[in-house]
Length: 421
Image 1 (cartoon, rainbow, N blue to C red):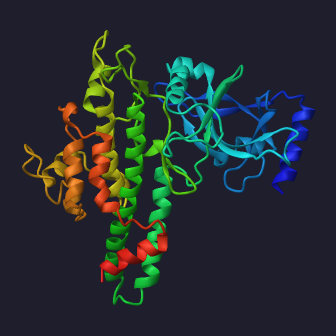
Image 2 (image 1 turned 30 degrees about the vertical axis):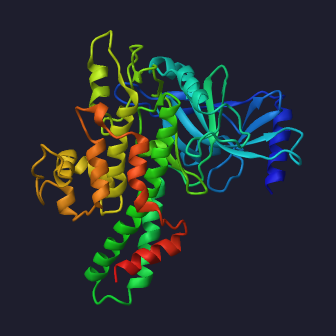
Image 3 (image 1 turned 90 degrees about the vertical axis):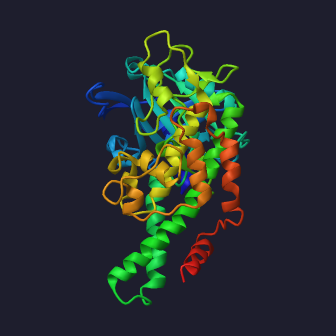
């Protein structure tokens, strides 16, 4: 079926004489600063490289059928995601005339409007330089780090394109939602006949889900740390570490993506020294990066790797909170989360949390292992970036908790359930 579909796409390529067709796609923009705009979206296919005869065929990410009609290409459910300057689409790379011989390859293709890139001061060339520092372009199946992606780039009159490995399990946020549902189903099936009331069942299920997810979340976080350790060793800082920029591949390996804010650091580890403003997520950014953007020009810059490690600490907290009811709102509902967390971690200078009414940890009865509190103490040092743990140090602290980690979902879940009695 796939071969026949791609043969039809190749026929369409020949009929169009290798010229892509575009349709206007209404992008909602980033109000109020950047209004909605029209993105010129390639329909069905995009010629990719003349030397290899490569073509990107746009498909729906769920049923992986070519998007042959304009209506199908306009369908937002066919998108993998939306970014500030464009969209991310699922595509299948193939080589013309070699469908029987050359393998196809699934990619996530970021399509960015050139006009919007200029208006929003996005430097795609810098993003490409950073990615090249970490991983040479190409889809040869050779990874310098399993926690990064292969990539290639292209430009035409309308757009800039960056193709990366497609992560079959989606973004970390999407993956967590599905996985939590899996854990709940697992627990209900095994506990429903052992409980005497619905409240008792709900409490038992919630306890199981929190512990089972915490174990997997720590495994995911270890992968993120390894990705950051590799980046920092290559003199790159990410500067936008958050759940949206971590994806999970088909083998359940976390990968760090989106290097639009990243920089190649100076020899002394500084970033931002070229006076560039850093685009970041306010909930995850280190204070020194925020201060850098607020500083009048010329800006002094900041230490890049420690800035990533603050964001990693925030990511760890949010990641672990996913396992609790309404946990995805942990950073929003508890605006004093860092103060509360560090009080529970016995960090000097943080004597008391805000209690049941003002502390999510107290309200949800969240329990972290001692070593996790140690990691939080080492990462969430707001005004002492040079004292923060490195990615390698944090991964080493985490390792004893994961030495017996079972990658099999059912086996791992049953082991957690057995510990609850």
